[in-house]
Amino acid sequence: MSRRTDKVNELLRREIGTTIQRDFEFPGTIVTVIEVEVTDDLKEGKVWVGVVGKMAPSQVLEKLNSRHGLIQSAVARRVVLRNTPRLTFRLDDSAQRGVDLVNLLEDIDKNLPKAPPADAENDGE
View 1 (cartoon, rainbow, N blue to C red):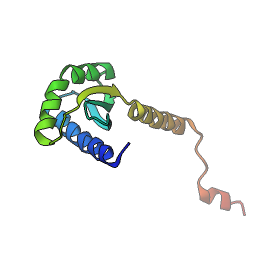
View 2 (cartoon, rainbow, N blue to C red):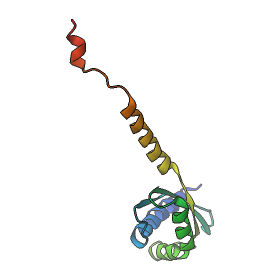
View 3 (cartoon, rainbow, N blue to C red):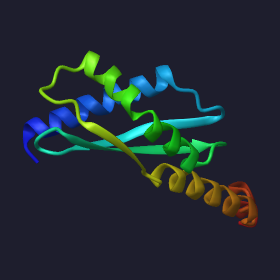
View 4 (cartoon, rainbow, N blue to C red):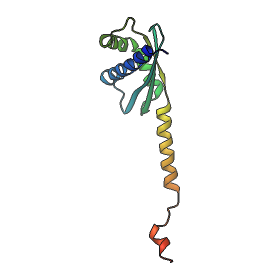
């Protein structure tokens, strides 16, 4: 990818994220724009989102993809580009995997036997 495309990707990531936060509600769910990949001609854009919370990721993606035109229009008003890419939203499940990993580590920590206090080791000497 070119440097220009990288800049456009980052700019769109921020603007799409702002638009989603401002114009959409996902009760009990955090939706984060992780990455945007546009084609070199700026006609297509894949938007990778992370979903953590009560709503099923498929519901969030369905809502975003069904209203992609609204998001594109909002972004086009704020970002001046020759073409505003047609956006498609895809799931990046790394955020959920991270939450699952933290929960697993907490469960393991709860089940580990507790080490004796450091002072107890020195009392025998």
